[in-house]
Length: 607
Image (cartoon, rainbow, N blue to C red; front, side, top):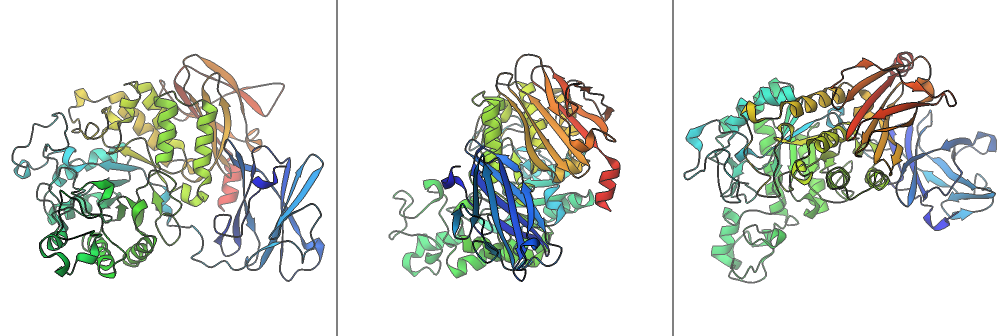
């Protein structure tokens, strides 16, 4: 065995409590390296070797280099002082892993072991259930709908004009409120609005006043009407908090520009020399963009100011949480302070962070709940839009992304195909809507919370900023009605399925020759099998049947491209030489989503 690749530490990345008597563990090995892995565990006070419990581990996730073994241990009593080690076998080689490293002889109960000490209630990754059952709908307010023409900025261009980084078209909060029925009919459950506070630009990421709505978007009363309308429909809404940087014209920064070292706000920023000069750019900026000075949130007064901003909009307007812009550049101490302050105001609020990579520093029990999952987006675009990954490479990318976080966090990740900062997926797919339908099917069945960028569901397409920020298409004759029905059907399917909202994930098939990738999502008594065919030729092949579904299970073909099938009985062809597999067929660029339900088993588990 590759001993250097065998990894476990008694830290929260590898072991944590999910309840008072339940532990979640992870062990990493080299890919396909071990034939057999067992967890041995016992309580500190136990001295009889017969008391050692042995639990067989199975590969949960697998990327190009590693196998990730994940398991749940139910101790029956409080999980405090649980001692454990791992036994690994490959051929005739046998190793045990404990706190002192690897050894080739069986350890004694008082020898080489790890120990989990105490399941503190705040040490796990649990969160209110609603956070993992969301379908987000992202809105760029300036381009969604002009609901109040009296607010339209002077010089605004006609609705539907070519978007630029400078032009305005008149979208506002009233327009969003007017279209809440449409958003609800799509199936979305949580709106995410890019910034709405006063700022000179059309995107509003250059905030000039954190306590005022931009006049082009409306008033605080308009926001109240929007929030009330969202909540009346059983949906939620989060706002964009730009707390990593401010706009050049924010009064606190302008005070430093005018008063230099005498300004009481000078320590809120990173000033290199005085006087402050935008042309010399003698101050830190986000992305080196001179109109967005970087904030020093290590300064106690600056930190407290932005905590008050967060509390104000939660308490006064009843929003349901925040998306933090450029969260991966915020100080860890600020993330923890912000999370504590917001949860003190609203215990079930959701806190979402922007990052384009590994969000491990951002998401934890005392920081943010979720992060924008660009790793998912990049893999989906590479395989389904650009043909730059094989099916197996795509599968490894997905498995690696999932392996970064605990399963509870994966169920809350914000899974997007595109955003205001990327090209539209349809644009990257060369306008091929079959590819977008496949990507939407992946997005709605993958672990995490799907996030739709406004207009994707009706066929909007455009290059990266500013091209992706076009006006929403409200002319029904110009909308792709078939695509809209596809999104609605997939969202209905997702929200009605426990396996899709809460199930685990396993790769089932990666066929590079045919360009087919399949995976399963499973909870006790229910499994959804998703088969994505990105190839250009008809495909048929064998797929596995869960043991419990070979008898007593109802099979349902939930969804397939083209047929728009809805919960039809499904009678697969069982291969006579292997009762554990069945034969499936898919045309080119298509998907099949099949659900197995054993009602008796599911009811037993739920009871």
